[in-house]
Image (cartoon, rainbow over all chains, first blue to last red; front, side, top):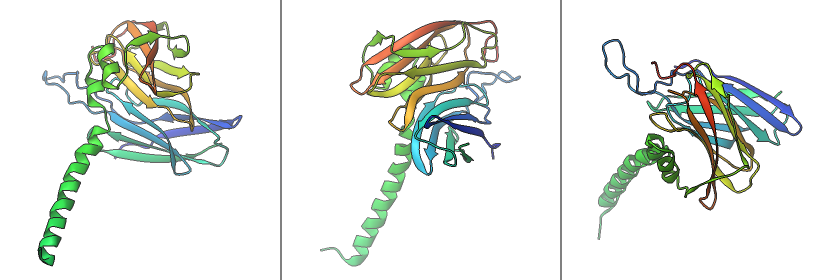
Length: 103
Length: 150
């Protein structure tokens, strides 16, 4: 199981800025190991976010997103106390969901 | 006239087929063609966009010089309405498309992430409109240290 995400969501002016730091290798599939064999690609493909259980954001990523990916976006109409949950799914089918409260 | 047993069996077969078909369909949600595209044009076509038009309404934020190509902070945003997707592409990466964000009413059309860049390259921010138009802005980012394990 992958490590938890670090999520910060701050409300200001009727919007909430959400910053997420995920923990993932994000292997491109272009790199070779010491024996010269290609390291298979392993990266987050889908990222979704929901506010109080309602989906608000979806994104698709390729292997060119950095290791331990960072994501920032803004949810309209979110206020302090709302719950933001982020889910990612990688190309091996592994998935992780974490939740944070807007402050 | 089919017996009850036959009907049940057909139902089970159908359910099996649906389950089998369901998985690849879910996998298709990930636009593989777009992420395997080797050129910006190809990637735009794979997500259903037409010819690229430069636009000042699409903003790309990124550094002029990235010291470490493994973590280049890139952002894309727009004030336009009727935007379907926002894309970040790095022209000289082996696969140009970095990330694709779906835009909807619940969020601002503004995203930031970090990307890997193999070498100095033009970075494209592309907004795919609901009618398929592809508006872009680009910026050259110089990389002093490659990000692809080099």
